[in-house]
Amino acid sequence: MSREPLQAEPFKIKVVEPIKLPPREYREKKIIEGDYNLFTLKRDDIYIDLLTDSGTSAMSDNQWAGIMLGDESYAGGRSFDHLRQAVKNVLGFEYVIPTHQGRPAESFLFQTLMKEGSFVPFNMPFDTTGANIKAGGGTYIECVYDSAYESKEVLPFKGNIDLDKLKGVLREKGADKIPFIMITITNNTGGGQPVSIANMREVKMLADQHGIPLFFDAARCVENAYFIQQREEGYREKTIAEIVQEELSYAEGCTFSCKKDALVNMGGMIALRDKELYDRIIPLLILKEGFITYGGMSGRDEEALARGLYEMIDDEYIANRVQQVEYLGQRINEYGIPTVLPIGGHAVFVDAAAFFPHISQSQFPAEVLAVELYRECGVRGVGLGALCFMEEDEEGGEIHYPKLELFRLTIPRRVYTNRHMDVIADGLKRVWDRRESVKGLKIKWAPGVLRHFLAKLEPV
Ligand code: F0G
Image 1 (spheres, rainbow, N blue to C red):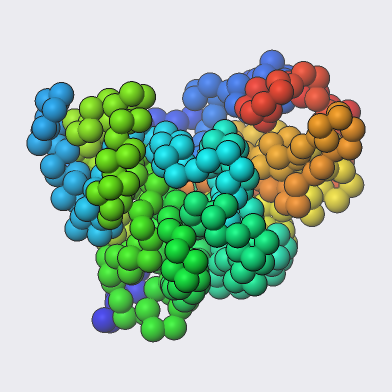
Image 2 (cartoon, helix red, strand yellow):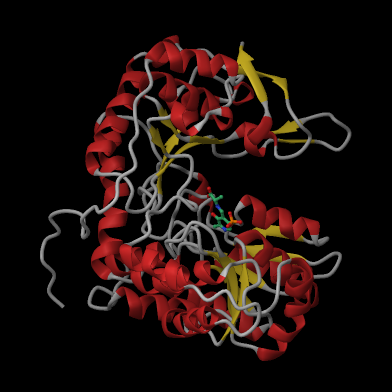
């Protein structure tokens, strides 16, 4: 298939939402008032918000039209039929369990499949996903290649599962202790890095040999498909729709936070092939979310999601989406600023430890960078480093720091233009130029769990 060179966004803008850069003195004040934690900021305090790509997409006119047509019947709603049909056509699964976002989907699936003492091999789980494994009495085991923890190593599929590691886990723990294997596509925690079809196929073969089902966390399965199309031998001529179908054909089912690739502001699901497993999960859905045809969503949410599922697999849309993230990454790399390489599908992950080599991990370089970028240009990103992931020994002794200390600039879908990307890159460059004079942060107060959302910090 021949493609035109892409010139610009494959959409025009019908509705706009004003944003303003608040004055520098105001930003300084907000940093202090908010105890150096950008989660305290209000929408109007921020110029460009890159906290997350989750639930922040701009919906299309077609999706908004669907909102008006949503059918709010308690049982047997028409919008659920549209969603179910879209899931079947786009993702290839017969059964859908609608939830309000990704994490209840994880919780229901894991509770149903796991028991106390289970082990679940992953490439890498997202933090709520890992927490849901633990909450079910299980332990997850990261089986991604070591290179995933090396930000500078450029490999096409850094989200891949290391089969030797996986075989080791299967040998050591035994198949009866492993209720399922799971792959996150793309691997958010490891920098939005993709997983190849070849790797999915091999993991699936191994899983079959041991009689273990394979599931995907498919939140960003379309961005993953774009990387396959661009990087994997034999996929250049395939459409995104075909690649998404093939990816998911290797899974028994998936959990899906629809707030990402599926272009809605709220919604999630479990999609399955197996009626028997579906029947085991739905009592949990009815208990915790709602009836089987709406679960955690309103009919209008389901209608917007059904349309979003078709829109997300448009070849021009997804190419433009991932290329915008790449554009920002390139601009940042041209200034010599270290990031996870290659640039991920949904975000640029700046290596905050390398950005501030004079600030130790105990002084939270990722949060420091978040504060400094906001101070510089009103842009909010998110620290994903020690503050988020460090763990203390049970006896309250040694602190274990995460391997990566990253600052994530997460790009919402269809929301900002490349001019915004320029402003972000230039602001980051100004922080880079004065990096040596920047000092670390320390904890003033922090809760026991979910530390980085609520922690109060202060300069050392
Ligand atoms: N899986 C992945 C890969 C995710 O990135 C997320 C959320 C979830 C599951 C959970 O889904 O939020 O709908 O309950 N990631 C967001 C982020 C919050 O900012 O990366 P959810």
